[in-house]
Amino acid sequence: MTENAHSTTNALKVSCSNCSLRELCLPVELSREEMTQLDAVIRQSRRLKRGEALFRSGETFKSVFAVRTGFFKTCVGSHDGREQVTGFHMSGELLGLDGIAANAHGCNALALEDSEVCELPFSRMESLGRDIPSLQHHFFRLMSREIVRDQSVMLLLGNMKADERLAAFLLNLSQRFSTRGFAANDFILRMSREEIGSFLGLKLETVSRTLSRFQANGWITVEHKHIQLIQPPALKAMISGCANQPAAH
Image (cartoon, rainbow, N blue to C red; front, side, top):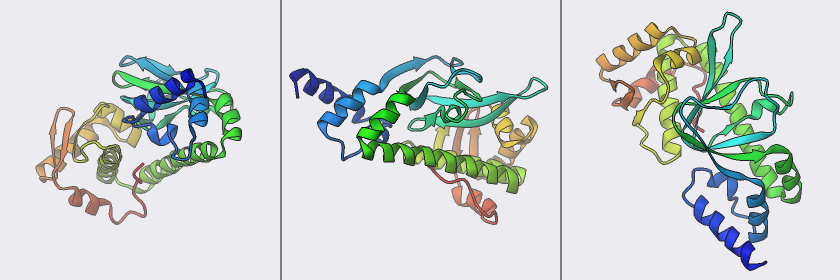
């Protein structure tokens, strides 16, 4: 390997060593040569301002994106002009998988705060995956994880009452933050209450009233978008009768 190649590989390892995406970019079995190949494919550090679109519905699908820092929402427009939120995505999660089947994105992906993504051009990742089977398997596993999350959301919306939906939503966020090394029971909601309501199929007033009731019960504290889970077991008990609760990812 040339001196430049060694330099590139070392730079990638330094930049990714503390990155939430190391699970995606650094499978332990990758050799230095394979690392260099991967570095040549992944386009790192695309930054977006709050409110900026990563992609929009109808755009030609070219890449999958891994959220490096920040928070995104995906949404679609309804026939009456309203916005329907379909998901929230944080660091370490993939965006853009909706475009694979039809070769076009079926939703909008908007940054809820200043964010950064790594771009994975899909056709090049496919080619590289054929050369590096361990990377292909790793990528398939991450894609499967996103499918499981979507199934969990369907169960949440189909089986739960309003207070159960909100409890499950808060617990799911808590689990996802914890998995990524952040505080599990003390976090800032990047989305508005209206966006939470759109995602959960609840009215804004219902979201606000339910949060207030949770706080009155001593289960959480709420200060604007700052949430503290004081009694997570109480929230878990509320949804324990449901067949499934959203899994942590």
